[in-house]
Length: 263
Image 1 (cartoon, rainbow, N blue to C red):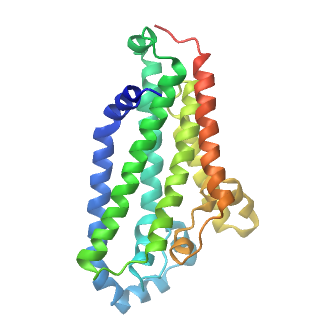
Image 2 (image 1 turned 90 degrees about the vertical axis):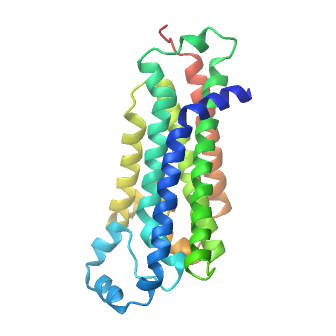
Image 3 (image 1 turned 120 degrees about the vertical axis):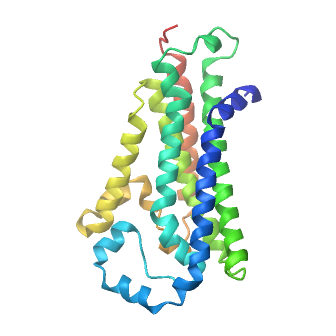
């Protein structure tokens, strides 16, 4: 893998990556700033207790504000973080692969000695790099918020696993986004498929008799409140996500190498 190919992909998405990262940092620090007043306010607990459980579950809100990590798992990780990752990965995959295929702007590298498989794997790794950057900023912001506003109180295992699981989900989304865009340049496909998976998990979590939908969804493993409380994914689950993403990246390279690309 040529580093220049990855660097080119990173150059394409770095502005968006920095923008998403800045938004994440500001939001987490804001949550950290207001946490002390919320955690000691009984009115907040009463308000949450008065809301319908189904509504709270749909919004990913819990009343576990007794710890800073539990609070963030409810107010950031349950919905906001995973939606940022979903949107970032699918949109930037479109920028890296989908849009160039649609507007036929691939002439410069099709005529170069760089192989198609090398190019698309470089785009995959550039997007993984952007995803890792977002994860790093998220963790750093949470640590800074704990140190700055909350006396340094932080449940490290919960914080680390929340970000690891979100990263694994983003990694798998990256894999199938690249695979679909290598096959058909329909820029809406990755986002549509991701939203279907997300809807399956929401429906399955709210309707016990449809829980099989959550099990079939890649988001079924993402349970922020449980992860913050100490529940961690199995080694088999972690390896399945990693190998799944690797296989999808390989499939993208094979499919893309066989495409009839217009000059």
